Image 1 (cartoon, rainbow, N blue to C red):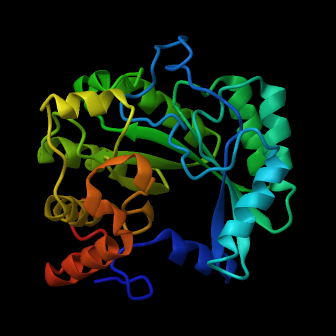
Image 2 (tube, one colour; image 1 turned 120 degrees about the horizontal axis):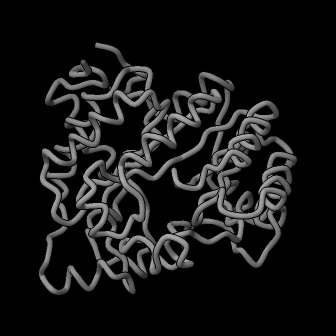
Length: 307
């Protein structure tokens, strides 16, 4: 059995400390972009679980410049850690969905900030035109870079129901384009989407495990107020995951991925004021500690069942 500084999974914190020798933390930014399944290019309304902030609820304010956001978010982070270096994280909405010169300007502003060692860009696989790919490759030669792709599920029926706006085949094409240029990829999955069985969810993890991606984000479905999915929930169309079921899925998922894949997240965050549920997810550290305990109790570690 392998361990990563006492953990049974290859955490992002372990990876970054090993790479840089000190604490590295993310500065979440809002580049002021939108999304093709919000503005009508692909669809309208966005993914039915997505908040009005485009899943960037903790990012900086888009009315500020990138530099102003960076300074503002850095002050918040410094209350937790008094020293370290930074990842500029373009989090909200689709961060390759804008004219190329605008993208270049905003990425450049972010990596020019003092002590920025990496650039993380969250986007969709259908927003990776050749000009965007060339820019990402250009940026990757200036700073350590990875692209975060929101897959959520490989099940096209599930994806259609939450209005993802692209098919699984489009995702596979997008990740290949990035990999062909040597750009690292982190893939997002969500446990608890309406209509998905445990088998469905773990099939997505199996795909990610064999996709060649460098990292994975495990997400719990956070049901937010003022979303289309909230209406489905109130109509009794699906139930939220229990903490026990989520921990069980995480343990199995961790066992399925290769040892060198970096686990960027085991559960997400949601603003208390707009969260409908699961409310147990607000006790994040208790959930993470419960996952650690379950891995030990079940004698599971990352890669144990990877084939």
